[in-house]
Length: 455
Image 1 (cartoon, rainbow, N blue to C red):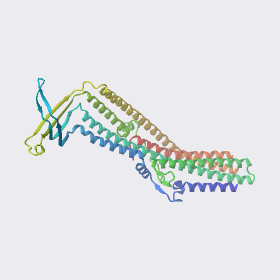
Image 2: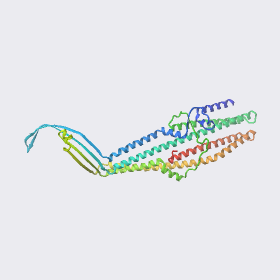
Image 3: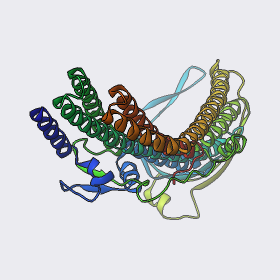
């Protein structure tokens, strides 16, 4: 029996050395068995925001769309072209001059050189509003991209908070499991002593050993849960899952702020105004509407104008010398009306209208998902608040029940089963409190994310 207890204690010590992050929590908070970085929640969030590739992709997408806006101004700006030097040399042979079928003379061939230059200024004056709608659409796409970046940052923040509180919850449950192992070890020692003096039967010693084994198995499962939770948080932060780090617990040294959240109607109204995903999808409808207007612009006439200045001569100095001669100024105004260009324009209009319907349905889906998230978060907050309020009395009652059960068993008026039941009730009450506290924080983080709050 002594050897078995020694082995269990050694296993617990080795487990603690392999999982140093838990030591920052509970009664071992002052120890630091291994050098590691201490991460607060804010620091974890900042690391995740710096490392998350989706945020960087969203940021680059905004830059791409900003460049597209700059390029879209081309449609409303004039185009200026200049042909600085234009020289051509032609050579021809003799050719007869024939009048009424009779050759009257022969035109001598020769070589001729022509010089020229020209400057042209042209501009589209009207094309059904397509140019201006292109600018408006590209600006809207930039706004949508910025909101998408905010939404990505918001989701990363929620994921970090969920992983952070999930790790703390696993650590707290592990502590409860360790306490349960200690209680069962102590009970086994008492039962063994009572058996040695003949107060109890050997079957009760075996029951105590079996109960201790079950508690040890539960502890191993909780240790695994801590490792998994730490790996998940590290993955969200974008750091190596094998990195050693500790985290601070906002519940240590203070109480949980359980201020009642806003009512459901108020939360839904606030989400309509502040949720970045809803705002992005509303912008998606506006950009789709502008795309439809652009497509309809193909049915309208196009007006363009141009001004040209040119010079020409057979000698170089005629073009680049006497500037008061050999010049020509031209004005051109063009009105064109599309009559038939196959099915291209109507196909573009149909595609744009369909995209608008898709954008509207996307917004409805986002609103439904946000509403569901808010309802679940508020329900989780209410449930956790009630569990926390009841857990204090449950723990006190369970501790007193365990004390009485152990005393009754010690004097021979109670059974070992009563002790085990009291221990189980105490462990369950403490586990319920730990889970409810961190579930409350997770639900609050989820609600803040649905409302567009990152702090």
